[in-house]
Figure 1 (spheres, helix red, strand yellow):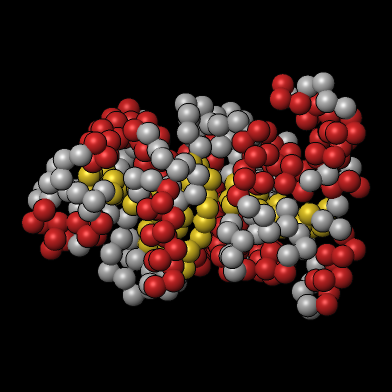
Figure 2 (figure 1 turned 135 degrees about the horizontal axis):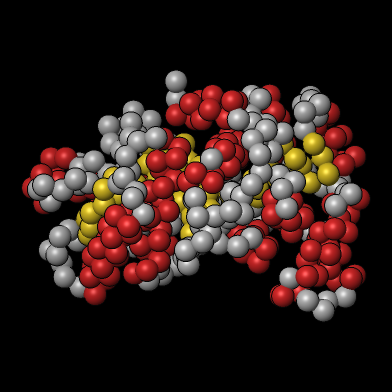
Length: 351
């Protein structure tokens, strides 16, 4: 059974409601149909109801277990407008302006998740990341103690001896262009938590660099070393069962024979399954190269640090990738309280 099939089996026992703002997109509709067909929960498509149902019918996709909502005609539309107008950022705006904002599917979907009408959100199929992230960051609070909202990708590389049977979590490949020491620490901690949640295995976190263990001492390498020390302390303070090491070159992180020479005694080198990149350039480029050259199944971005589970897919994502992200966002929703016990905000009951 593949990794994604294992997640399907888990989610079938605890189905969740996922809202998709891009309801008219054929890839999203296919992913929603598969999500419902696999009995993973109720997919919710936003957009023109007649248009979406006609598109589904024309493609021989049943809409029986797919919920379609047209924001402006929804029962909760004015309630969401009222919620928006009470937010400090929007206090004092005209009602017509509030209606215009909430009629945007990305804002409506975010309000649905924030107020318990959906368990998670997956968007971005037709828009730039900023258009989806803006309402998420404005409306949904960070988890207690979280100062940095970041993201991670999940890659499953076929016939791969590295990582967790070829499975890796990569962070951050989407949000923070030039992370500080504190931000790198947060990315490492949240990525490790996510890896344990979706696999149940021990995270082995490699803080990647162009150098290993001080062989090229520069300010950039020193930042990775400092972030590693900070994350190690956070793991201890939060009782996170994980190993972390850095700075490590990519081959040292993955290949045991190289690790034994360059980082002997490391609990991570040669065994890494969570890869943390020093900046957005290296993370995004590496993720896309792995996906295309290694023919890896890629799922992302999974947002980390928000009180509500959310995913931001690429505009080039396939329906399989969108389904995979929806599945992982829903898996987050199953036991979000257990993963982040300090947060009392997530209270949606299991379906």
